Length: 80
Image (cartoon, rainbow, N blue to C red):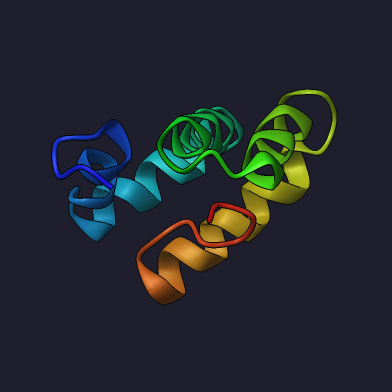
């Protein structure tokens, strides 16, 4: 992964900023993050998770992403 990628920029944000973003824009941030991660890694599961995030599973991904941001300071579930 390139150091100047958008996902790396998001991961470099302070933990409190990422938690606030997740609280208010979680489904949007999670979906965009996974789609951008797909463009970097070409992992099709990540792309499918990003699309599913926008078409109906946003609430589930929002909760999971919020928990993983709090516990591991990174979106980890289905974002390989």
